[in-house]
Length: 502
Ligand SMILES: Cc1cc2nc3c(=O)[nH]c(=O)nc-3n(C[C@H](O)[C@H](O)[C@H](O)COP(=O)(O)OP(=O)(O)OC[C@H]3O[C@@H](n4cnc5c(N)ncnc54)[C@H](O)[C@@H]3O)c2cc1C
Image (cartoon, rainbow, N blue to C red; front, side, top):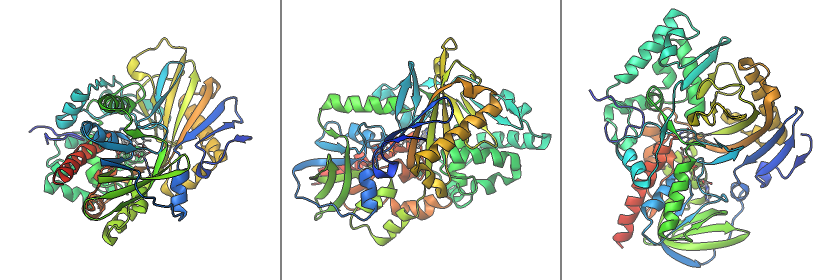
């Protein structure tokens, strides 16, 4: 049997400078009580929160016309724009730069991610797409995944480390059996969902925790870390479908580039602009999308305090449904209800800028019992151990009920100090190496791949509304770069047909 893996496509503090996050300014600097500076950055939801607060923006008559309007410039919107690069389109993005979660920054020549970190093994259409756009991924060298539990660090947990896990024999056998069963899973819960065997959809009806129970509580605990990091919530809330699909990609090689997945967004941006400049507007938040008859859609946005409307034959909504549900007018009640049932996990991505290289043992280290789930060594693939500086990218998801912690810089400071303290368990004295901390806050970034999402929510939430299409990665009910590419490509194809049919 051909083994089918995850995302296998066709084959199978003090003084706070600035305004609070929700007040609008997306940058603040906080002096820490420790010796290091904490810099806080985040998405700009200033206009979005005015919409949420019930403000009605005017809808002026259109000042522009184009065949396609793409709302959102994350990987899904950029992929749609790339596919339509020969056409008359406009892409509208609220941030100052495109990329969405695929964004990076640098310090001392070290690129680090402020969002997404790595790619699954590319196969089928995804592999072809990377080839076409010229994205050359690097395989992440071993040890890839390690775990710190019970005061013991075990490197390379799915290979060399499997027999040395810090658990009893029974639990280790559970890990081994799980790996073996995952390699032979049939039918496989595929990505994209459209290509899956209908039998595999049964896995959507049970939680990953329930599925994992026979393998032992230690594996459930470990997968709880993974699900909170990658699937939007704890293991008992995530479906077995997405848990199995995602995890199958972790036991085979994964790939990345300096700064995570951002290079893909940068390449797409460049190629779109090479095909024709001036079609991407940044710093513009879309506040209203409504059909005007059967062949026209009006998309209204706010940029620099001005409100403008563009008329289009087809709108591709590549923003998360948490906000789409508020701005797309005329949604049928069942579609609106389905979107309201989607949940999004808040996230703090914390980059710790270090003097020296106090820890460089594994690409991704999972921390049992810490406030965060895992952290990555930013320049791991570069293999440069001679540097005098290093960066750790810490993934600190928050429970959905704790989103309010991101509202206050003081709270973020507390979370950052918690991270530093927890890292001390693994690397005693590491706090002394910290030169600066850069925290990036995401309010509602990661869709929860909830139990029943594919069968009970997706069919309603993602339905095209006339000439308005929904292309965000959350249309797969899972947060992965491959979901974004698939949705962008698929919807660009549908949009072309709509416009061609007049
Ligand atoms: C912390 C974190 C880590 C992750 N790690 C990984 C990983 O390692 N590997 C992986 O494959 N995936 C990862 N993901 C999943 C990630 O969501 C996808 O990889 C992908 O980047 C999503 O792309 P997208 O275009 O669907 O959505 P987004 O990135 O959400 O893009 C949507 C865009 O729409 C814009 N927008 C929103 N509202 C409006 C509006 N009203 N008007 C105009 N523009 C608007 C946003 O600013 C954004 O640019 C991670 C996600 C997070 C949050």
